Length: 106
Image 1 (spheres, rainbow, N blue to C red):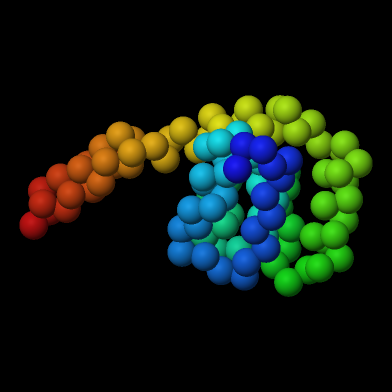
Image 2 (cartoon, rainbow, N blue to C red):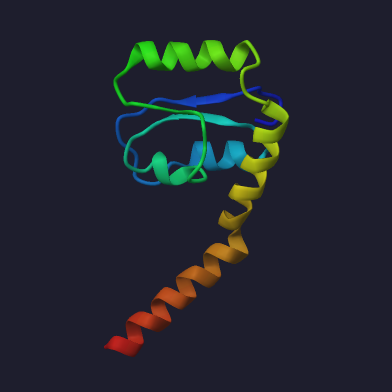
């Protein structure tokens, strides 16, 4: 995925989408629909977000990206840094904390 300039994920709904996270971990920016799941797979101030089911907005964002409106070098660094929080060790620790919290309540 690191060889790609951009990954596009225009889904209407996702559980937790692995493709955008994996792309970002490889340093590839993603263009996503502002849909459940996808919205949470990118950093909160991510600029490459379009309304779901809006083909004109998607096409416009693709044009802007290809024409250099966005600094892909900066987006690659931001994406990679964001995705690092989803590595195996961090995810395992978060699950462990969730289970510990659950069993404290039981």
